[in-house]
Length: 144
Image (cartoon, rainbow, N blue to C red; front, side, top):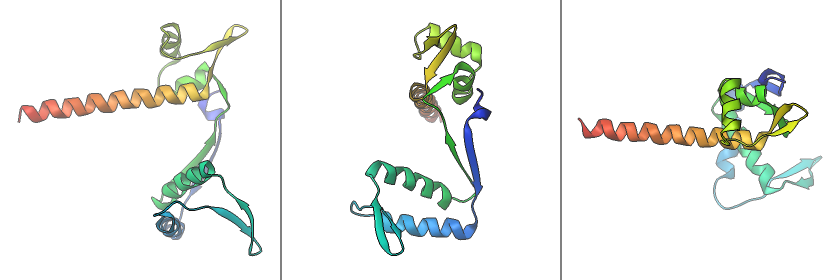
């Protein structure tokens, strides 16, 4: 499986949809509320807060306009998929596994990684990159 094999759906938002999403987001600001689903004017379900946060992130993306991509990644991914998510080559990922930088387990002769571990590694890498960039900016400011 490659990153291209992961279930992905892209939706191009219109300006009207973006404005509607911005309106909903304005209504969601303020004290904690409850999101619910109505059908025929009757409340049919109350959404758990975790689902509400996911939907709010989708609304944020729609409100900014452009293309919104929603994807599904299985709980376990191959090394090729993990490398694609991390933006590294497969040999680099294999070195990361050998060095203990990211957890993996074997299925037969093949390595598999938990997708949550891959995304955690990606977040950590991006945080390190941001920190290094900020340090570089501070260093640059000292010499001006």
